[in-house]
Image: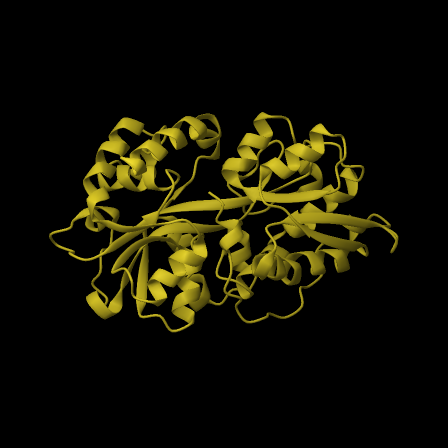
Length: 350
C-alpha cells in the first residue's frame, strides 16, 4: 500500500508552526541530532517543511533527513545491527508487519501524550501519522457532477458505461470489491477473500488500465484516458488542482495511513521519542495539510485553526469524511498480504 511514495502535489506553504511543549526539549544541546527517513521526493519535502523543521526548532536539535523505499530497508539495518535512522515512516501494513517482526522500539505514550487519536492509531511500537484514501474518481467532462458515487456504482457498467482504471494490487481493491458487494464498512474485516475475488471477476473485463504507480494514475486522469478510476485521494486532488476535469467521492473510501516508529537499535531512543511527541502533536500535525493534500490523523489537528473549513472538506480524515470511510486494517494485511498477493498475480494474468 505504498501510497506514501506517491504523495505529491505541494499545496501552498503555511505559517511557521507555533511552539508546542517547551519542556519536551529536556535541555537538548544544539549539537544533538536525529536522522529521520521517509519516502522522500515531494512528499519528503512537504514533511520536512511541515513537520521536521518545526520539530527540530522546538527541540533545539538538528534533524537530518533521508529516504527509504520499504520495510526491507529497516529490516536490513536492524538485522545487520547497523541502524542509521532514528525515526522512520512507512504505510500501515508495513508498520504492522514490522511490529510483528520486532523491528521497532516500544513507544512511551507517557512521553508522546497523544491528543485526538483513535485508540487504534496508537500501537505499542508505532503511531499513525497522516493518511490518504483510495476513492472512486471520475471525469466531469463525461459525467459532470453525477459520476459514480459509490463502489457499487463503479461496478455498475450499465448505469455508468465507460473506461475504468484500478490499482494493480489486491490492497484496497479487495475492500472496494466487498463494499461494492454490499458489505457494511464496520463488517469489512476480516476480509472475505473468496467473495472479494468473485466480485472482482465481474469488473475485470471492464478495467482498461491496472495502474502501478500514483504518478501513472494521475496521468490517466489528466490525459482523460479513463472515465472512472480507483485512485488515491491525494493524487486525485493534486491533478484537480492542476486543472484536470475530474471529481471524486470519499463515500466508501479506504483510509491508508502512514505511521511513525523508532527502528530497533537506534542509539537515540529517548530523543526520538520526544521528536515523535512534537511531530504528533495537533499543533505540528496540522501543518501537513497546508503543504500537500493528505490528512492529519489526530482529530485535534482540525481544531487548531490551521486548517480552514474549505481545506478540511478535501481531507480524508476530517470529521465529516471519516463518517463514510473505513481504516485499512494493517494487522490483517500483515498476516495475509503475501498469500493474497500471490492470488492477485494469478488473477491479473488469467
